[in-house]
Every structure is written in C-alpha cells, then in structure tokens.
Length: 154
Image 1 (tube, helix red, strand yellow):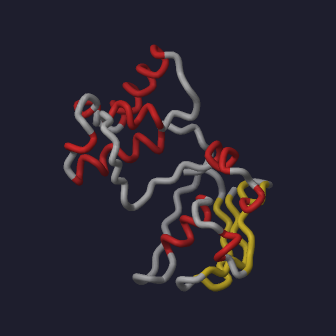
Image 2 (cartoon, rainbow, N blue to C red; image 1 turned 180 degrees about the vertical axis):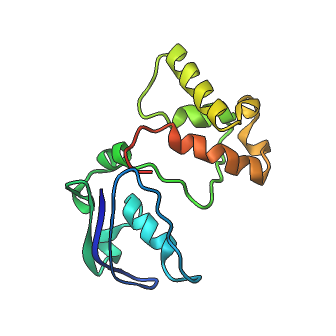
C-alpha cells in the first residue's frame, strides 16, 4: 500500500492525503501546474523530499520513503517518466534487459525479454537502435521496461 499523509510540496501540493492499495490502478487528475507530476515523483522517491517537502510523509507498505536508500527504493518502485529519452547507443532489447531487477543468466534474460516484448507487441523492435525509434515506438517500449522490474509498485 502507498500512503501519502498530509504531504505539502512546492508546485501546488498542499496537505495531500491518499491511500492506494497495492495492485490498484489509480488516475491522478488536475489542471496544468497543479502538481500531478510532482506528486508522482515524490511517491517514486525521485524528488528530493528533504529539500523540498514542507510537511507530510509517504509510506510504501510499512517503510517511510524518506528513510529508504536508493537501492531499497529501486527494489520496491518502478517509475515510467513522462520523457523517456535515452542517449546511449543501445538496442530496444538492451534497454528492456537493463530494467530487469537483477542480473540474469543469458538464457533467462533472453526468455524474459522475449516474453515481455511479446506481451506488449514490441518484439519486432528488439534489434532496432533505441535512438531510431519514433515517438510512438518509444512510448510502446516504455511499458515493457517498467514491467520488466519486479517491483511491487508501478
């Protein structure tokens, strides 16, 4: 469960409280500049709360987000950013494989990447250099990258 309690941050967030059960799909709506992306970044642990948080707490199950190490956060959270530009010389296969939670044996990695790519109908892109993908193709590849992690929170 994700619990946000009385969270206030710059960019429009004032005393936000919500409880999101694990496994539930939730939408966040609001006007431009209301703080939707800021809230998601705070929950994902990629917004430095210590410097910008004015009040409140975020919990992932029974763990205070602010007390978790980067390694602990990466094991529990998978985050798909609005902008998914990658500037490395990697294929789509390489990018999906990088998202796997832990190093895999070559055969296990191939099987997992193939399974994920088929699930999202992007297997035809696996050998293509990421930089050559269209904007729509980049969005299509992004979901498999997040799903390749075994984090409990997406």
